[in-house]
Length: 554
Image (cartoon, rainbow, N blue to C red; front, side):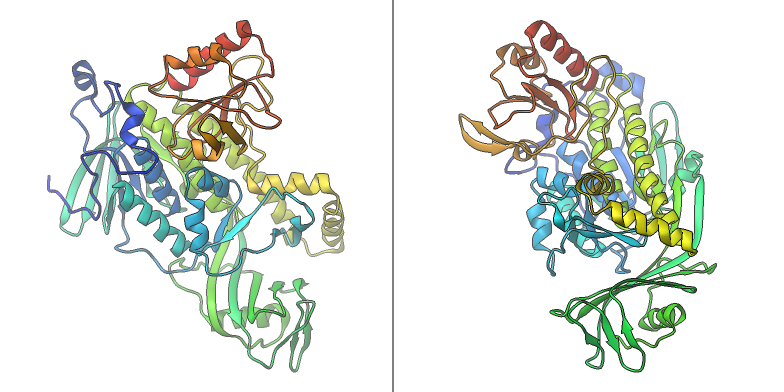
């Protein structure tokens, strides 16, 4: 077996971080490194080359690697492409992942990388719009950040954390048994084999990992091609105050969506900017290679077919093409092989895939780390499938609804869109739809009776007053460790949690309008348990002990 050079190597010592040393996650735990005690080594076989092998260095794979390093786990990322691709794909982040990045202390870095202004919260939804600008606290936000820049930021973070990232290394075969996964790799210096405790396929829609695991990927491919561009217009095209375009020799192209018998044209413009967003949708049966970039000529040809006009454009800022599929893997886990991101799900709408994939990674990382460190309770890894498959199904629900809204061309379909748009003028349905698209309405199922209403939901970023000053839930979550947050000075609950103090951080503070007496928060920022206001010790203490055991081991 030959060895191949890595771009970044895992450091042997602790990582120099302001808030956290990832080895802290397992201090005093005999099973911290794969193998653990002597009898564990004999049961598990030889020590693997890597705790976790991640196939694919897109946003999902890089996010997973970074989260694993925070948890003190040694991942190896294998990417077949020799360098980051510059083919335009996603144009930004949106939804719950932005709050999660804030909880890791990374959002300011991502915001600083944005070259353009953050848009108002107004999002396309199946040929109509969710206009959240009328809400004082909209449930959905977006950050314009082209995928190339997003991957660069995640790549830089991986280098800081010491992630072993190998580009130009293609996985050619995978096999697993009860103890490990064997991964055959073809690298620049020849073939080699890696042994790992777990393998995660983050290798996209055509996932070979999914095929090797024999996981079905049922669903629908829609016969439509979408083209999205940000371009500048010549002086001959006038942008009117209402955002319409005045095209010489044609007349007015209205802002928003224009539907014809040949497809859909979307226009987004502002009289204060020379940059215009164009979007076309056509039914086609042509198979396009995702790695072949779209051209200005292809965009103009599409506009001409849809609207029957030659639209002059110049200086493209972004050109991308994509098709829509609605597919979800039947299971996200097969033994020691997991799926995340596009390898696990494809949604027939824009603006949701990155959010879903990166949240998959955050959910999975701490559970893999718990198993590798030796304290995972029985069934913890199975909750990755149950929780994220449920979240994927929820995302599939609203994206398929968007298909029904946008693909109808008859008067009945137009009436449906009109009624739907009217419903969104009311605050309650608008909030509900915004949360659905953002993924903030997800509530993971919790086992056992009598759960607090917040259990299974994402923890709000409460402002906290402590004896060390003012902090927040978001700051407590920077190290990606479990937290017991005592909001009512409950020594009875802190005493219970102290038994788990090497796995769970314990914090005490107060907050305005506290939602509960105490919150047990998982590393992915979801609430595992909560004590009701003034809940007596004889019910709260045993319930907390049960939750700690169920999520963080005996």
